[in-house]
Every structure is written in C-alpha cells, then in structure tokens.
Amino acid sequence: MKKLKKVYLIDYSKCTYDSCGRPCIENCPVTLTNKKMAGKVAKSKLKPAIDFKKSSSQIIIHSETCIKCGICIHQCPKNAIYVKNLMEEDETQQKVHQYTENGFRLYNLPTLVTGRVTGLCGPNGIGKSTILQILALNLKPNFGEYTSDDEDMTWGTIAQKFRDNNVRDHFLEVKKGMRSISYKKQVLDILYEKYKNQTVEQILEGNTNANVDFKKRVYDALDIYSIRDRILKQCSGGELQRFAISLKLLQNADVFLIDEPVTFLDIKKRIRLAELLGVRASGINQKDPKCVLVVDHDLAILDYMSDVIHLFYGEPHQFGTITGVQPVRAGINSYLNGYLRSENLQFRETKIKFRKTISGRTWSNAQILAEWGYMEKQFDEFKLQINPGLLYQNEILGVVGENGLGKTTFFKILVGSLTPDKGSVDLTEEFAISYKPQYITGNYNGTVEQLITEYSQKYVQDENLLLRLYTPLGVDKLFDTQVSELSGGQLQRTFIATCLSKDANLYLIDEPSAYLDVEERLQIAEIIRSHAKSTNASAICIEHDMQITDALADRMLIFLGKPSENGYTEGPLTKRDGMNTFLKSLDITFRRDDDTGRARINKKGSHLDQIQRANEEYYGYF
Image 1 (cartoon, rainbow, N blue to C red):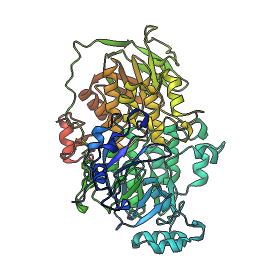
Image 2: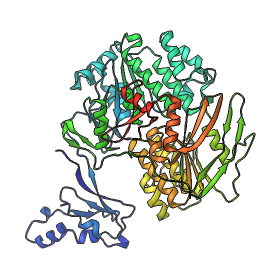
Image 3: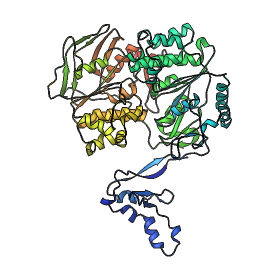
Image 4: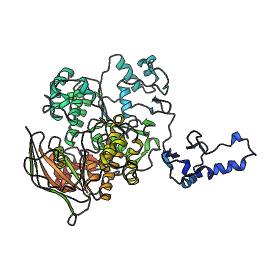
C-alpha cells in the first residue's frame, strides 16, 4: 500500500541559536559518524543530515541524508523540530498546472459527465477552484512549465496535451463554439461592480434565457421574488448567493461550474438548490441533459446532490491530485477515512469521525449564566417574537432556522446594537459579550496581529492563547499578513480567533463554518467548546450545516415562522428535541452512515425516511 512519508520540519519562529547552541546538530548520529570518518573519507562525500544557514544561523534538515531517528526532536530545547507525515507526489499522474518554482501543483482534471451532477470533495487549498478556473477557460494550464509565456499557447494546443479524451474534447468544443459554460465563482463581491445600480430582476431578465417554467422554479426555490426589486448593494451575503446561483442556472449553457453554492444558505434552500442542480443536469423536463460540476464542503448536501464524485488528496497549498470518478457514498467515506481503496493509497494519518450519540449532559444543577424574557421587534414588513429562555454556564447553544426569521436580529439585541420594542435583556455591567458577525470582510487596514490586538487588547504571543487558539487555527502563521490579503477560509479562522481571544462571559458566533472545509469545521467546533469550558464562559452559535450543529451544540434554540414576514423562537430544547422540532418543520429526515457516522439526507418517502418519521427520529439518533 502507498503510504504517507515521514518528514522532519522546523518551526523557525522557535529556532534560535543564541539560546540553544544547536544540540540537534551536535548529537545527530550522522554528524557523529561523519566526525569519525573525517580523514578516512573524502570530505565531499560526508553529507550532513542537519546543517545551518550561515546567513541566518537557522538549521536545515536534509531529507536525503536524514535517517529519521528522532534524536534531534528530543534534543531541541525549544521544540522547534517536529515530524509530519506528508503525501508524496505521484509523477505518473499528469501535472496540469504549476504556479511557481515551489508553488502549488495540480494533477489531473475531472471527468465531465453529461446528465449527472458531479461533486468535487477535498480540503481547502487542494486545487478545486483552480480546476474550475481551468475548465471555464479562465486559466491556461501550463503542465508544469511555469516559466513559459502562456500567451503563446493556444487552447487547441493545450487540448492536445491532455491524455483524457473527455477533457480534450471539452476544450476543443468550447473553442469551436460547440459548448458553452456557465460559471458561478466562489467570490461574489465582483458582482457589485459589474451590475451597478441594477435590480436583481433587471439583471436576471437581461442576462438569462431559460424557459419560463424553470425560471419560476428557480425563483420559488431560492426565494428570488423577495429580493427582485433590490440592487445588489442592498443584498445580504445569503441573498447575493441566491442571486448568483440563479443568474448562472438560468443561462442556457452546456456545462455548469458551481463553486461553493451553499455558503450562507439555510438547510431548506440547500436542499432545494440540490434539487435544482439535479434538474439542470438531467435536463429540464428530461430533455437536453447538461454537465454540472459542484464544489462544496457541506458533506450532507454534497452527498445528496451528487450522482458521482471526485476526491482530492495531497498537501494543501503544495500539491493536489484528483482521483477518477467514484460512487458518492464510497467516495465520501474514503475521503473521511483517509484511504483510497481503488488506488490502495493512504493519504491522511487519521480518520475524520463524527459522534454517533447525542449529549447526555443534564442541566438540573447547572448554573444559569443569562436569561431573557419575552421580547418583540417590529420592522417595516417583519415581526420577531422571542420567547423566554435561559443560558447555562459552559453551554454551547446552537441556533437553527431558515434565513429571514430573525436569528441575526436576536444576536444584535443581545449585543445591544438593536433595542427590542417590547421586553429587554437584563445583563449586568460586568457581563461581557464578544461577537463574530455573519458577514466578514477583509476591509481592515492592518495585519492579523494588529486586528487581534486591537479587538482583544491582548498580546498575541500569550502562550495560553497560542496553545488554545492561534496555533490550532493556524492563525499564528498569519500574524504578519495583511487582513485584506486573506482568503475566505483564512479570514473566517482569523475572525473566530479574534472573537474568542477577548475576555467575555458570552461568545456570539454567527455561521462559524462558512468557507471552511470539513476538517476545519469539526476543529472549529471543538475549539469553541474547549475554549468556553476553559474560560468558564458560554457560546451561542448560528449554524446551517446540521452535522456541525450536532458536533457543536449542547442544546438548541429554534427559529420558526415565515421568512421575511414573521419569526418566533422555540426553546432552548435538548438536542434531540431541537433536531426533531426543526427538521420536522422542514419535512426532512437524516440518517447516520454506518461506516463513518456522518449525517446523510434521506430521500423523501424512502423506507428509512418513513421509519424515522414514525419513530419521531428526524436526525437518526439511534
């Protein structure tokens, strides 16, 4: 079996010669052997395993001579040397693109299957968006020749370089005008500039050409009627997402490339979107089937919407390899297990696991942290009614509900930026709240370190925070980076770290999983839980990924009603009751995968769906 290779890495922020004297070099068996062999063997043949840069005095580990004994790790007084298992690049795969000499390398492209929704599954930084850019003909692949001038390379020449006939035909047909592409990008801010001062309906009417029946179906499923008179600047992130998806699905294209479409959408709209993509792939009214390729990190939705799937493996931000077509269930389980049976390849050290049972925590003796009574807030066309509730010490309260029912308004009332028309939240002056909003941007003039310091009033090198927050989140590597230069995932991790770094009794976190892959989502859930426990605080988190809600929450607060008209709360409830109440209101059931424990959406009317409804087990807790 192909396995991960063990490499020795150095954290240069900890590697300081002045305070250690390089015992890693002095005690290295290769160094000691070379000393014994000095004078007996030509000096040029005595290659060290550990050396140092004369310019900076920082050590270098030479992988070709290192014997992987581990002595240097134990000798280092600063714990600057550590081991990591990395994937080896398979040079038998076709290198499609390379950015710079040591930049990211992409191997292979997916198969474009007409009449099917094809899912792309993998971590952030592994090449998924790069693939969509290439398939959209927005990025010319260089096949590893990163120094060449791509202006001299025609798409016809590029097409002939691919081994796969399916991929070759795609580029040739697009250039000949025989195949058209509709591409929904991950980043949506560019739409503001492109469609200045136009309403949603004006843009859709002027830039789409789907038939009337399908247009109505899209408008209904994504609730476009409620935003059709707004200009894009007036749209929230979720509304902008719905518009962008509609704009692309309503175009009469042959290939639909959809990058992370469910971000900021509630679970009901995610399922409706999955059904729309299925209609687009099979063909409207079962005529004229299309190719649909989708990237997303909500595994339950990716599973539900996909007919086949491709997996990515490799080392994020270093290289990514895409597999051949996989069956959906087996493919996603292979991704979670870190083992690709079809290629006999282990590509991750550990399995990604999900809890199969609900929390057994009881609250009879728990200390109450905060309470709120009945409250009302009336806007022009929307009324929110918040029923009485309470929050316990060290509790994580999960908040779920469709978009437009007042969840973020509830947070703003707790923070104090909105005042209810009736009722109030009674908190002492000493009660501190830290808030991570739903929509985050890089519009901050400064570095990540400056942002965190300014918000938390704490030194970022605090050892406790480094150990508990910054290092696990990877934010310590971003301290010197300008906030404006961060990717979506980096921005999300930075804002969560910033929120949690502040001393508070209560942390309000709105959609912590947006832009993050499944590993990062589960890690974020664990970090929030452990931070609340260690600081004797509590957290309230709004989340639309039901699997992450399950991993994160102790109890649940449900928002019900009619979106954009009226909303009301039910709970807080136990997690079992909360999941059942919420999913029953949406008419959805989830089951558990026997292998990985992950949540899977049942087809409505299926045998298991009927059993779970009869047993009032809408989330499969059994």
